[in-house]
Length: 288
Image (cartoon, rainbow, N blue to C red; front, side):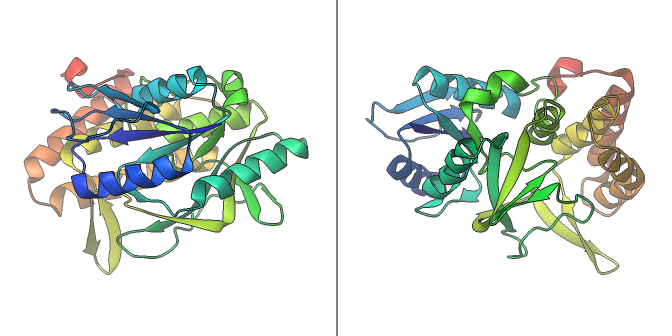
C-alpha cells in the first residue's frame, strides 16, 4: 500500500482540491495536516482520508511525523510527502514507488527518492551548484539531500533514521532528515526521468542581475536560526555549512536592505541569529 501526507498552510483552495483529487487517484491513504489558522474548506467523505487541523501551526516536522504515523498505522509500505505548492502528474506515485521496489529487489539501501524539481518561478529544472552526485544508476542518482515535497519514503526503514526533527520547526527539516539517513548508510535518490513543478520560496527578486529567493519575515527567522543550529551537528555536510555561513551576510543584505518592510525583516533575522547562537529551538512564539 502507498500513502501520501499533504501539509497545508493558508493554501490556494482551488489548487489544493486539484492536488488532493490527483493524490486520491494514485494512493490508498491520504493524511492531511492543516496548519492554517482556520480549517481549509475541503469537502470529502472518503474513509481513506485522515484530517488533522492545528490552528496554532505545529510546523512542518510535526506535520510530517503525524502523517507518517497515520500511514504506518494504515499499514502502508511507502509514503509520499507533498506540499501544497506542488503539481504532481497522474503517474508520479507509481513511477517513484517502482524505484523503491526495484532498489529493494536489488538490495540497495535506498530509503527515499524524489523527482527532479522544476521551479515554478523560472520554469527551469533546479540543479544544485555545490551538491555532487554520490552514485549513479540507469535512471537515478544518489545525492546528499532532497526537498520534502515529492519525496517517497520506504516506511520499513524509517525506524533506522528516526522522526523528523521537530526542534527545527520548518526550514532545514527535509535536509536534516536526509543527512541522518546518510549517516546511517542509507541512500537518498533523485529519479532522473520524473519531474515535478514546485514553488520554491515565497517570491523572487533581482540585484545586479542575480535572481534570489525572498523569504517572508518569519521564514527568515527560521532560516537564519537553523543555519547555526545545524552547523553544530557533525553529520551535516561541510560544504553546506561553509556555503550557508558565507552567504549569510549577502542574504541579510538582500532580504533586509533591498526589500520592503526592512525593519521588520532585519528584526526577524537578528532574532534568528541570536537564537541560533544560543541554541534555542522550536517555534518562534515559544522564544519571543
